[in-house]
Amino acid sequence: MNHIKQRYHALVAVKCLETYDLICSALDSMNAMRVDSISAIVEHTFVFTPDIILVDNSILADNDYNTLSYIKGTQKLSRIPIIITSSEISSRRKLLKLPLVGFAPNPLCFKSLNKMVGRYLSSSNTRALPTQSDYIDTLTSLNNKDVLKIELGKLIKQSETFDDPFSLLLIDIDDFMAFNYTYGYHEGDQVIRKVARCTQLSMIGMAGDIYRYSGAQLVALLTESGIEEAELCGDEILNKVERLDIRNTNSSYRKITISVGIVTLSCYKTISEYTLLECANKCLEEAKYLGKNCFYSRFLSPFNKPD
Ligand SMILES: Nc1nc2c(ncn2[C@@H]2O[C@H](COP(=O)(O)OP(=O)(O)OP(=O)(O)O)[C@@H](O)[C@H]2O)c(=O)[nH]1
Image (cartoon, rainbow, N blue to C red; front, side, top):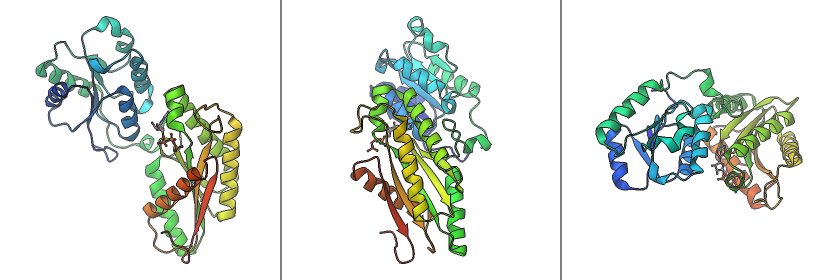
């Protein structure tokens, strides 16, 4: 098992506890997590990658088939088997065309399900040792959070040794949950890509890099940058995203906007990556509190420490 492997090995979407128990016994020693809707599967797979997803047919509504196709179309999840507890194959032809989607026989029995889970897991060629691609976010092609942590560690060390200032910008798309619900996850993915592109364009000519930090959040690290340069860059990204003019009826600006938390570090001894990210997160919360579509910045030095 590789190092990006996370807590749960299986995601089980069910309403009824009995079905959940049956599925869990068929999973042998796998550590399962229970959810009660298809959208909850999407939410959880943003955070961790299970080895298998089992869905009880009784929770599926018609439009859930599109969501399952979305899950299968995501590069990160395309090799994860999905087993649906139903034999009504005729109405599910669309899904059968997707790789690694199977239907457990009806009525559900422990033995057949156990066999099926084993077969699907072995054919899914479950993930091997981490490769270069494990450090690249497939949606945006940016480096991921693991690389950010490594680079941040290096920058903190350099700043301790050489007193070089650097800045971290935590960028978050505003009202994105509602955007996903209104316009769909596919559209949401496009928005994340476009915001990543705006951030890249705003950093042209500046030393540093951009990372996908989590779902709707990016981090820009600006090396050799004081607070003024960081604020100018933050302002530039805000303007570029606003000028994309992507409709979001859920936002008070009626369009997609971002909020940015900025932290600049100078001559600061012994600060952890975690404390720095926490501080950026507090600045981001301030920006949200101030009405979103703006930045909030903080300068950290030996005389101005985080709370
Ligand atoms: N389309 C898409 N959505 C994602 C992805 N990763 C996370 N999300 C969604 O991003 C949303 C983030 O919402 P939040 O940051 O919690 O809240 P918000 O609605 O943006 O509200 P504010 O942050 O207060 O503006 C959640 O609904 C996640 O499901 C992704 O890769 N693609």
